[in-house]
Structure formats: C-alpha cells, structure tokens
Length: 508
Image 1 (cartoon, rainbow, N blue to C red):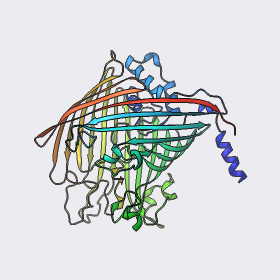
Image 2: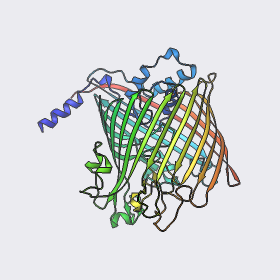
Image 3: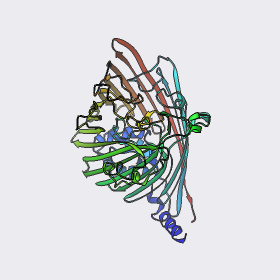
C-alpha cells in the first residue's frame, strides 16, 4: 500500500501545474475546422493531422511556434479562434486549474437525417437542439473532465438507437487522464477520429456515439503506438439491445461485445506520415476487457485466433498515408477484411478506401474527396461482429457505395470568419447495408454496388460565419437529383459557448 501511495504521489507531482494542459479538445469542436485550414498551409504540423482529439496543451504549444507576422488576415483570425478554445490558465506550481463551459446549438433541417447527401423523410421543419454543461479540473499531469450533453437527436436519429432516457441527456466527453512526455493514458467516454477532421475514416471515426474506453499511447512525434479498448452494446439472438431494464434481451442474457484497435504511426518529417492500423470486434457470452486486445504491441493476426481463443472476433487491417507537397495535401486510407486466396466459396475481397487531395491558395482551398466501400464491408456472419455501436458505424455509417465530392472553400478577408463553400457530390449506392444479414456462400453478390444502384447528384453551397470565438452560424442548401427525382435538402444551425476557468491552490 505504501508503494502504491508513493507512485500516486509521484504522478500527481510529476510536472509543475503551469506546464500541463491535458484536457481533450473533443472531436466535434468547431476549432478543428480552423486547425485543418492552418495545417493545409504548413502551420500546426506538430500535431498529428490524422488522429484526434488533441490535447489542449499540444495545440497551445503548436500555436506558440507559429510566426504570426507571416499570416494573412484570414489565417490570423483562424489562429485567434483556436487560441481562445485552448487558452491556458495562469497558475503556479501547486495550483490546480478548474473551470466549466456551456455549449448550446440548434439546427433546423428538412430531413430526419442530418447528412444531406442521403436525406431521409420530407419533414419541412425538423428542429434539433443540443446543449452541453461541463466541468473540469487539472493538476500536474492529471486531468478530469465531466460533461452532460443534451440532444433531441439522441432519440430521433433514424440510423442509431436512442442513447438517452432522462431529459434527452447523456454523459459524454467524461474521462480521467494522465499525460507526460511520451506516455498518455485515459479512461472514460469520448470520441476519437483516425483521419483528417471532417473527412471519412476506415477504422475509427466520430460517426458513432462516444464509447466507454481505455486509451494508451506510447511515443512521440516521429514514432508512436496507440491502443484502444472500448465496450460496445451487447447482443441477443443477433439483435442489439437498448440496455433498458424493460428490454427482454437484458433478462434473457446477452453476448458481450468489445472493440479493440491499434495504430502504429511513423512520421519522419513534418509533411509526411504513414500508419498501420488494425481493429477487431470480439464477442462472447463471457467476454470482458481483454489484455491481449489492449496491448498495443500485439499484432492481431498472430494473436486473436491462436490458443487461448476465448472470444469470437471480426478483424480488419488498414494503412494510412498523409503527405504535403508545397500547397498540396493528400490523405488516403485503405482497409481490407477478407481476401479469398483459395477460391473457396463466393466471397471476394472486402475493403473500404477513402482519400482526398486539397490545394491551399491564399484565399481559396480547392479539393476532391473520394470514398468507396464494398458490399460486405464492416459486416460479419455472426451479427454481433458487425462494425456498429448502437447501430451507428464505427467507421462509415453505410456500405456498398462509391462517392466523390468536388468542393472549394472561399475565404473573405473583408469579413473575418466568413467562408463560402460551393460543392458538387455524386453518390452511387448499392442495395447492401451493414445492418443486413451477412450473405451466405450461395448468394452471388457484386463486390461493390450490388443489386439496383441508385445515383444521386447533389449541387449545393454552404456558408460558415464565426466572427468571435463564442458564437457561430452555418447554413447549407442544395438540390439532390436521384434517378430523375429532385428535392431540396438544407440545414441552418447556430451555436454559442460560454466558459469560465481559474487557478486554485491545492494542497496534497
């Protein structure tokens, strides 16, 4: 016991409090849009451009290295918005930083689904509101964050299960963490996104609701390894249950489901990086947190099917490339599941790939984004192996599709914080879905775009305006043409943020 007490005391006093900012800048924060814009122009590249959330302290340190005298008026405005989001609390050694913040937002969407490329329903005035009340504290290398998020979309989401009961509220971005030098360890509930913010990812994205998880990262900017182990919703008879006491599946027993992922990053320079990623959903009536899945040094291919095999599993392998050449930034990911090398059965390669290329000009960004997901991707013969959490995809929400988007971001220096984004998207959607039963060997399916394919062309424009750090507004509208049928799909949203933070003496 004395040894444990000494270790805890060493962790608490490892570094002066003034140098630590280990809170997570959650992945849905609007600051990421400005971070990405600056990274396209060669700034803030001390941060990993394909792995979020960032720590507040890491963002603040990256900001400090920027030569502000060489920034354009738009770049200077973006940097000020990000600096405000991660501003530090002046404090002395032996003091703790505490604070709270309030986020409020409201959206008006003429679709049950917020994604406007695939609108669902024709409701003309569908209103979604959301708020978050959060409190946090930091001392030395330790941090804790507590947040209650309210959103009516928790209940009305047409793709996912209802995640909230009382007051449409759920605990999110709530965790305890430790960071020092080359070690980060966090436990709690928050989202991660293994890809460029705002773009699709093949292994882990911010699409699902946040999960309860363990997070461990070892290494620094050039070489690092990350391990994630999270608890998913359980299943009974191939159906995911809501977790409510009145649900029969709870009383009847269930199959426990867990998600594990590893990521190895190699970054020899600021403008180039490659990553190898692997993930697995493992499940069973007696499954629980497993050390062999958490250990980031294990390679799943040589572990999960060897003895002892205590769980069923569905695994994936993926590679990632990010590079910047002058004004051009490229990002690509490729995920593969099954490769039929022996010609047995009818199953062919299961894959997903996403990519983008963006050219950053002084007052304009021009880019193209591509996505292709095969018909069987993220599915499994055992329903509990599907790549879903509460019916929302851990990577992509849909499968069996190909899409491309051509877009331009136009920045107006005369109106700081104003951005206009015209874009054209083309979507080819097949009939398969992650939530459908996995096809048997007797079913002959196309590897991608199976069955009757629907083509959608969306022509739209988006306006984003954030003149001050604590308020923003966004509007998007456009027309979707699907197999000769045309409809308007649009949204309007506004957001507000209020924060208060201070330093307080803390005696150990």
